[in-house]
Each structure stands twice: as C-alpha cells, then as structure tokens.
Length: 460
Ligand SMILES: Nc1ncnc2c1ncn2[C@@H]1O[C@H](COP(=O)(O)OP(=O)(O)OP(=O)(O)O)[C@@H](O)[C@H]1O
Ligand SMILES: [Mg+2]
Image (cartoon, rainbow, N blue to C red; front, side, top):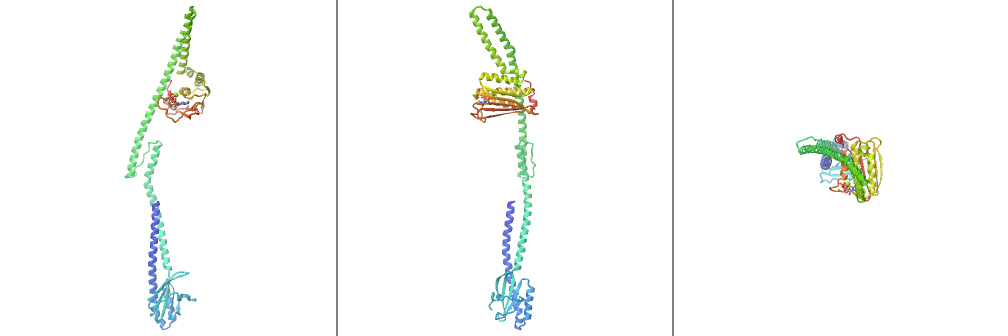
C-alpha cells in the first residue's frame, strides 16, 4: 500500500512539474507570437489612419482590437515624437508606460515583460511604417496562460486523487485476496500450537500457497494421529500404574495381615511357652537362657509389629486417615526425635479410600525424605478439606534442595508422589531452595474428572 501510494504521488508530482514547465514555455511562446501578430496587424491597419490623422477611427481600431482578443489588456499608438495618438485606457493614461518599451525602426518588434499589480503583461512595440508613422504598443495579459495552467494543475491533482483512491481500493482488495490464505494458515498454526489438531485450512488456489495449505493439512493429520496414539498410550500407562499401585497395596495389606494374624500370634505363643518353661525350670543357667530368648522374641515381636504397621496400618482401614496419620506421625516423631506439628481438618465424613491411601503414602514418603535428606528440627503438617479438594501441606526447616535440579535415575520418591496425586486428578507442588527448608503442597479433588473415574475404581 505504501509503495502504491508513494509511487502514485511521486509519479503525479513529477508529471505535473514537467507538464507545468513545458506548457508554460509553449503557451508563453504562443502568446508572444500572438501578441506580435496582433501588434503587427494593428500597425498595418493604423498606418493609413495616422497618415490622414483620423484619431477617432484610430481609437475605434484600438478598441476593436482589444474587443477581439481577450488577452489584450491595452493598446495605444505613439507618433514619431512619442506622443500618444490614441489609447484604450479610458481616463488616465499611465505616462510611465511609454518609456518602458521602445522599438527601433530596424526592429520588427520589441517585447518586454511588465510586472503589474494585475499580473504579468507582455508589452509589444511594433514600429509603424518602419517607424516613420510612429509605434503601435499592445499589452498582452499573462492571465490566460495562468488560468490554463491552474486548470491543468487542478485537473492533474483531481486525476491523481481519483487514481490514488482507485489504487488504494485495488491494493486493499489484492492484499486481502493475497493475505487471506496466509492469515488462515497463521490462525490454524496457532490452533495447532494450542493442541487443536482438528484444524484444517482451505486450498485457495493452485499456487505455492495452495501447496503450503496441502502440506499443512497433511501435517495436521499426522499430528492428530500421533496425538491420539499418545493419549491412548497415556491412558494405558495410567491404567497399568493404577493396577500396579492397587496390587502393591493389596499385597502390603495381605502381608501386614499375615504378619499380624499369623506371625505375631505364633511369636506370642512362643513367648508364652518360653515363660512357662522359665517358670518350670529350676536350673539357673537354663532359666537365664530362657529369659534371654524371651527378650529376643519380644524384640522380634516389636519389629514384626512395626513392619506390619508400616506395610499397611489396619487403623487406616478401620478408623480412617486422621487416626492413621496421628499414629504415623507420632511413631515417626518418637523414632527420629523430630518435633511434628500435625493439624488434620477432614470433618466427620471419611474420604474415598483411594484418596486416603494416596495421602497416607505421600505423607509417608515425605517423612522418609525428611529423615534421609532434610536434617530438620521440626516439621509441620496440615491436611484439610477445602471446598471440593483435599489439601495437604508438609513443611520442614531442613537443608532444602534445588527443585529444578534433575536428581537422575534411582530417585523415585518425589516422582511417585506426583504420580499418585495426578492419577487422582490432583497435583503436587514443591517449593524449596537450598538452605531454607522444603514445602510440599498436595491437592486432590474429591470429585474426580470423568476421564480418570474408571481408573480409580480399584479396591486395594
Ligand atoms: N525434605 C527434603 N529436604 C531436602 N532434600 C530433599 C527433601 N526431599 C527430597 N529431597 C531431595 O530430593 C531428592 C529426590 O528425592 P526422592 O524422594 O525423589 O528420591 P530419594 O529420596 O533420593 O530416593 P527414593 O527413590 O528412595 O525416594 C533427594 O535425593 C534429596 O536430595
Ligand atoms: Mg525419597
């Protein structure tokens, strides 16, 4: 558009200046020739009238000459002494005018240009009868030339304006036609960038842009296919993970129950047997040995109990998350001598089993991480229901770590926590910098998104 506008304006300006100058030259030459011819004609026709001294006819001739030529501003006849014989000025004849132009008898004519208040005037002096009868003077006004030039310039300006408007319209239309497919492509590319792979573009013409549109559509088809494949795989992965977690929980629960119901019972029987043996035995040596064995069995019983609780605390199934968390935190705090401030606001209603298990395991892993890495003095844990979510915040005052650092393979704790949260449609956010402790924010929605719903229907 800029090129069209600039080009048209430049062309019309250059053309106008060129035409103005050439036309001025041509018109002025023509006007000079016309003035000379009028002057000569006047001189020829005035000769006889001067000779017979018919001043009345002479004045009539001058008036007639002026009337017949629009450009003639004035005309007058001078005698050989330079006295005015007749003129067209009406009352006051400008005496200065006489001396402004003079033609010698040898000259055919003599022209000077006079700058008058009414504009430029070409004053032409023609000797009459070789100068022996006087001089005829004619003033030709430049007004005609000026008017023609003004007309021409305004016409060129008008034509330029019309051409400009038409060029602008044409350029706008062309720009629209040319850029429409490109804009459509840009729009579709943005949509694909946002993940809308169903977008296609029209093939507007059989040109390079048409080819580009075809290639784009082909790319969109491939991307859509790849995206579908990715979604299917993601769904499969989730389902698999879900089953693995479910199987793991089930296995933990089974082993825990086995340890509690069978192993612990047998160890207790062993303990009772050893006590009976201890009481029945009189030999001090055997008595001491039996007592030692009973202490060992007691420690094994404690270990089995701790193991059973860690594997799957029955209190989680029987009394719910708050009680299980209280037990977990209490035991952990006692074992590691770290102060824990636990606040649980979950109301009276129990949470869905999947959420309770996930939260328990996430907090368990968080506490394990604090034991292993944080060197913390105190920990605070908040678990509460917020509208349609359950939120857990675990903060420690330990050494902290760089969240953006890739810990590499073999570090599965944080990734597992995130997986568990995301499987339930929730999220895990970690905030920590080296030297300033760590905070974990876990958010789990109570109403599962529709696509995850079938996946979490497992029963541990
Ligand atoms: N509370 C914390 N304070 C300080 N550093 C932590 C904390 N939690 C995690 N980290 C850092 O993050 C790293 C990754 O933790 P993650 O639980 O994923 O793996 P891990 O504990 O090293 O191994 P595992 O797979 O057995 O859990 C840890 O190695 C540790 O450097
Ligand atoms: Mg860990």
